[in-house]
Image (tube, rainbow over all chains, first blue to last red; front, side, top):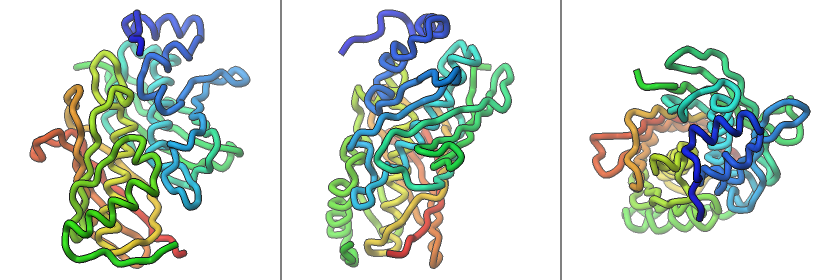
Length: 150
Length: 149
C-alpha cells in the first residue's frame, strides 16, 4: 500500500487547485476503504459513498449500517472544510450529532455539507445525505470542528 | 424473522448475541467488531486497530466514522440486552463527543448502557476508551426505536 508522497497539507493545497479529489480521498485509508469520494456534479462539490455489500448493517432488509451514514456525513463535513473553506489542517471533530431519517437502500449515497459558521478556531457544519431523491434525506448531521490549536 | 429470548448466563448471552452481531451484520464483520461482554442492559465491543481504518495517515488514529459505527453497534447490542431477546431496533439519533485525542495504532473499546426502555424507545449512553475506562476518548448518547415486525 503506497503512502502519500506529499504531506497531507500540501496535497490538500494542490487538490484545491487541480480538483483531482481522488488523489486526496485515496491518500486517506478509511475513505478508500469505505468507497467515499468527492465529486463535482453540476458545479457543486458533493460526496458519494459507492455501494458495496460490506456496508450493509441489516442483511434482512437489506439496509446500510447506520455507522456508514455517520461516516459519510462526517467525511463530507471534513472535505468541505478542507477544500472549500481553506482549512489549513485536518479539522478535529469535537462533537457530531446524527439523525437517522430513513433506512439506507443498497445503492450509492450522496452527501452535501454546509458550513453554517466558520470562526478562527471553531466551525459549525450541517450535512445531509440522500439516495434517489435529494428532497427526501436519509440522514442528517450537525458537527462542530476545531480548526486549530488555541 | 426468528424470535428468541437471550439466556440468563452472561457467556450464553454473549455467544448468542455475537452470532447476530457479526453474521447478520456485514459491516460489523468488515470492521472486525468483537462483542466481548453482554450484561442485563449493557454491551462491550472492541474495534481492533487496522491500517485501512485510519482517518489521518499522518497520525495513525482510527477514523471518526469507524468510531461512529463502533458506538452505533455497541448501543444497539445494549438495547437488545435490555430487551432480553431479539427485536428489530433502529437508531433514531446519536450524538458523539470527542473528549481527548485517540492514541495511534491502538484498538478502541466501547461500553454502552441502555438506561431506559419504554414501549417504543430505548435510551442509551456509551463511553469509548483505549484500555483505561476512566480516560474515555469519546462519550455518546443515542435513542433507538423498536420497530414492530
